[in-house]
Length: 298
Image (cartoon, rainbow, N blue to C red; front, side, top):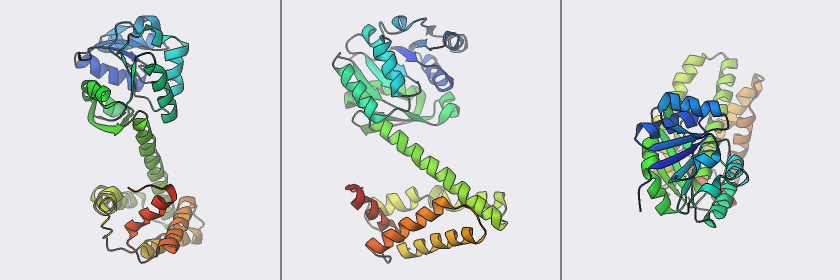
């Protein structure tokens, strides 16, 4: 199968501008379209390539169409209501690199498949900073052969590609990673505000948290990979002792009138897991609490 050379890139805002710019830089034939014509023209002035004045100009002849828009609803609008899909030849690959809902992605894929057009979801992590230096992390879902065909595009824009599985799985992983990041952010801020109310220095707390909770101390590196995924469960710390420490954190917050809604819920969950599974089990065996409720095994 011929390599992808000609690309139509839909949506060249902050992220799309940087990503499509990398494609131009790496030698791809790029035509951009944006709802704001001046944004598309500014891209050409900055990076080169071509700007399509209408969607009817953007589609014909494209080997691949890349979307970097707000969500799958916009993708559907552009493809079907605005008519872009009508101008795409059979065998064209459409790639949604936005943050979209997996169910919407799968539905769009079915509609495109009936037209002989391939669909891949490939959301990114890293933001504008990493888009500018082509070090995005990219999560791809879809037919394996289609993902492989798109790999040169992903290599041009990112540092690492995670091949996730069927269509929609890239978007699932993207939303889950942002969920983890969102939890970690407010979890850390909650802890630091409690500490600040106790009189701890913010800089000292930040340094300590960086050392004790990230890198080799991060739960993924220290506990999930070596103990949960291997089912070794051998960290040497019992669930009941983690539950005790979380309870102390909650009680400490209450004693000074600090807000601790996440800590309260965390203490509740650890206590429930200890009661159900047994508090003397290794802390990593708490995974069974979620596995049993969800009906899966990591």
